[in-house]
Length: 262
Image (tube, rainbow, N blue to C red; front, side, top):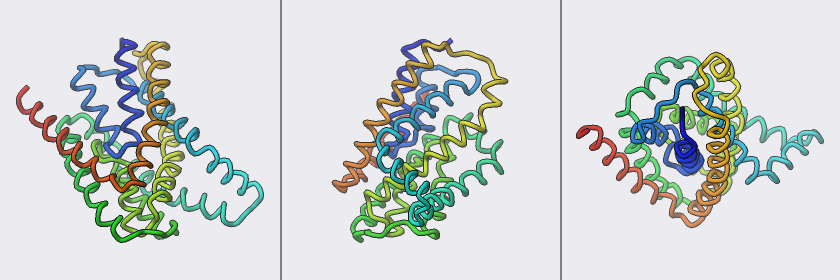
């Protein structure tokens, strides 16, 4: 049975890395390897993912509220923006369902996140060139679909969803702050959809996590998620976004070395 302290640590890791461009899935694999915690079933995973969904809603509540209000008023711009979010969600959904077994197998190989960290670092470092071009555009359908393909890359543990989508958006000419907002808003249906699809596994799987541990992990993920989003946006505004690449290269090399020597 997972302890409350272990749940707090894993919840903190999930909340911090879900939105910082360093890959939550990769860090959870690494954290579980280092802590030697392997929880049966997906209940805890679903709980902390839903908690990070709450983080997005809290930070972007005005934007989400305005979008929903505009849709209720049948405003064309609101419906078009919602359509772009749906379009950006489709690639990852299709690829995830088509290659579900192969993608799940990647989580069982501890080497994968270490290598993927290094790849994500390269992606983030490239953002310097994208930002130097002074992107100022807003997403359109073609751009949304391409950002969605970038999101699909994050199905591999160690590839950052927020990092890959924002970097893709920047190279496609989307303004930095809008790129971050679109990335986080498109995460809402992605996280919610993944949680819904895992309900049968939650119901059928063993209960290896106490209610206290679930609450501890969920609260830790939600609180750190809010702080992570704000940190992400601020670093993007200051054009220091690429500094996360240095962290990922250090972690990736250190983790692969640890695997090789243990």
